Image 1 (cartoon, rainbow, N blue to C red):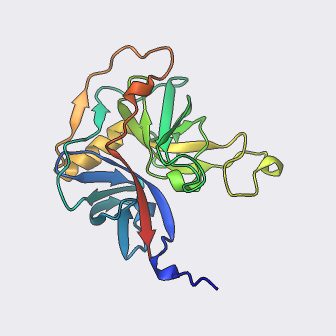
Image 2 (image 1 turned 180 degrees about the vertical axis):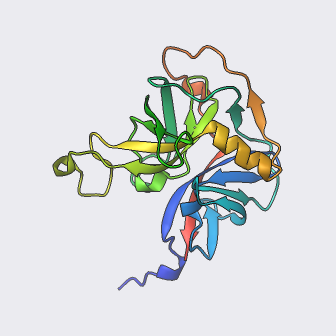
Length: 217
């Protein structure tokens, strides 16, 4: 018989991304709620700096600085119908260890509450992808995915807990995200918007600064 020590298995997993070279990481507040410890997949422990329950944001800190940090887009938030993508780790342990990009469009503005602070994306969000960055076609971050919006086709929902065919997701806007970072004195990188390519450029996929996170309760 093989004994499995459940104390050392994560209770939940999610996504975070490095927002400054000082090792600060942005994720969903649900990723840290009730956790005695939050770690990266490579076993680095993170401390909680600040949370915003209204907008489901949490700021964490890695034990050391990092040379890689995300680039946030300045200017306005995505408009209705704009192409976007979510980068995350759906079904960890079952799919590739590298981050996976899922593209879609902005399906609705003024989604969620408070109005004007969230957008709805035509992109399913697995339970393991809360905190995933939302990118424009040039790889700049324009928001953060916070939760799934279940579609109507429950009969077609897979039994393994993954998403259904018409599920959407909710994302906090880049404007709200940047305000949260500024309120917590985070020095983040920005870039002005530029013309997006016709398809998402794989070379623009953030690799070094996207992290799979694990919650231990």
